[in-house]
Length: 163
Image (cartoon, rainbow, N blue to C red):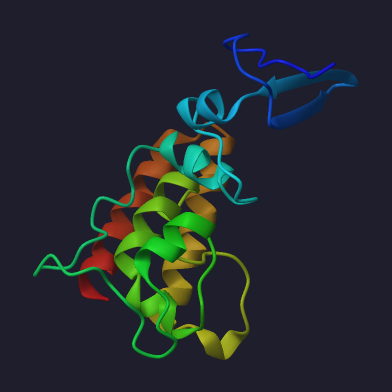
């Protein structure tokens, strides 16, 4: 006997989905129309679109100033391919699609600049000082010493304006 669509119950199921969450297994059978209606695609990376959509629409700048779709000059990878898969074609794609990548990173994580440990020669003296002040400010906030955190914040503003 042919399995029918769990959503509409009218058409035969052509799509099977199985989820295991906290040891509880759930199964779902869908016909082609309900599968499309619910937004399921055959791409293994289709979930990335739903993941990114929870952060707003970070890809609003997909089109260039002339309305042409962006394409990497090195590998020919397009903005649509990046948005569909979440992968880039080559190292130059990071620069080509920076206006697509940066806003989504900023929404997903704390900042788009690295503030962790790096080799000593990597940062300029101003950047090293700024990162040290950032670390001290976070420590002051964690210790609930907001007066000290405010002073450090003022130092950071002065340094950032001059750096």
